Length: 286
Ligand code: FAD
Image 1 (tube, rainbow, N blue to C red):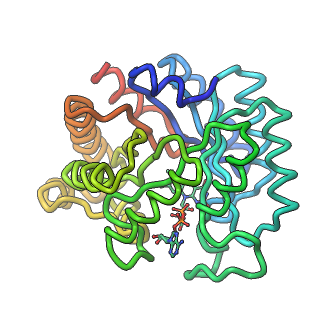
Image 2: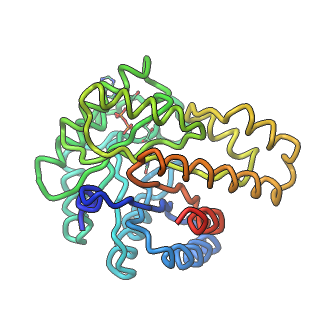
């Protein structure tokens, strides 16, 4: 099923994101956690592609398995960093042959070890080029990425919104946002997008804080801010994972409830291949 049909029906979509595991223990961990999360009957699940230098075949194998062996509605992440048109055409054929109907199409992060994106002979410069290419095939429901606190490379939020609008003009059916912790950024982003003429659903991305040291590093990298009040709450418990979990999950529950009450079309959870926090949040907001 195409995710846009779920969103068009006005149903809230609840989705979980996974990444391909790299070794046996993480395969086992993912299996256990997918098992827990399936019980929540998600609207769809997604599998990242090439993020952090992960293996692209593993991503294809995992999305194929979840779609065709487990039978969940899936959305494959797919990036065009340095890819040729021939490669992309082959990969899109793979998704079609495997009945994977939903794709989130991205430019992609710079390859591992490089901090800046420099196109090395690829046919696609921006995600909008990839979206245009795939949308013309008329086979997929397409999502694109949005950045409530602006993409780290963008000049400002307005130019970022103009590029978002272009991604929708090229064929994106809905947007999934980068994670954020202050809902004000999301509300402002949606308002600006609507004013610019972007009418498609904008699904907020949620990452529960379960490890303060990790999240500080990650938010710095993607240009997201942790609200001062939350930092003050978490800081005294840097080394206390149980207390961090309690604070992080309680915060996420409030954040999710507020987003849904204020009209968010659903929630997309960055699960980091773990299930406990998402299960606790989900049970509390459903
Ligand atoms: P783009 O939309 O191309 O934007 C990149 C930058 O270029 C922005 O600053 C934008 O403002 C600017 N821009 C866009 N169009 C133009 C234009 N025409 N002219 C000038 N500037 C322009 N990465 C992975 O590697 N694998 C994944 O699986 C993955 N999944 C993700 C899922 C979500 C929901 C999100 C939010 C991000 C994900 N990412 C993933 C990260 C993403 O690849 C990076 O954020 C990347 O740096 C930008 O991708 P994009 O698709 O937003 O690019």
